[in-house]
Image: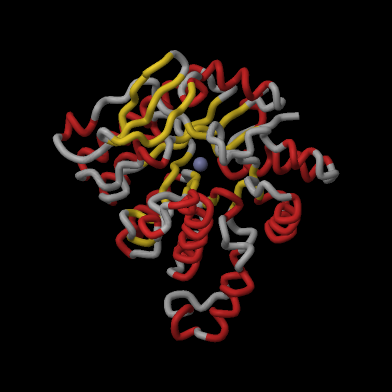
Length: 335
Ligand SMILES: [Zn+2]
């Protein structure tokens, strides 16, 4: 059985020290302080330690073999989005990261599919880089759930949505720059509470602003099973009905109508929630996604789904068909 993990992060082994190069900011650079490990540093500040499976493609393939998974869809780590950089510098970062992924997928096409990153702080540069991503063989892009705290509902992004639809590129929306993180540093709350809320923020912004309505050809996929959107959909829909003066000002269509029109990944860590998401989305709109290689990820690559006793065709959809459909790839690519 073909198994594709569509939500994994990768980083080049060596990064430029962009803070030095650009002369400002605290961009991530890597300190390879001992074999097989590197410290991600934000300026002088320690961000997180990563292991070689963050950058070593063969090691990743070997680790995935343990879980009978042949293909990884790779994108950058959100801390490298660089949206706060000056636009031309953000473009330079995106190009560097996208070239790295394009080189990988060209060398190992049966194991890797690539998603690019865009300098979202500048829509024109993003459109140019989107076109370049397409030309260098990437199948879609990953964007943040907000762009420097601007919501995806902002009309400034309309030309980009048009370009994404025209170029037929898939979109993964990933939570980052979590709302309220300054106020809730303790207990890892930005990751545990902020991230699911961020993803719901992105989905609601795209629905309520009518982006999904006006650009029905865009294939959106939302990380972590859509965050708190599906679990709180009853409340969101009720709000739409009871306060249309606040909610339905740009799109008169019930948000529930959009469920099943976009994809979500499978990273729920919970059988009960997974069953609910499956009931809501259908198996054709849930893609196996783990957030590998990070500890909050589903690092046994969908084992909990295999153990749920679901019908084989449902599991097959989640493990490969839904992702092939989202990325518009033929299964034969991985034979
Ligand atoms: Zn992720």
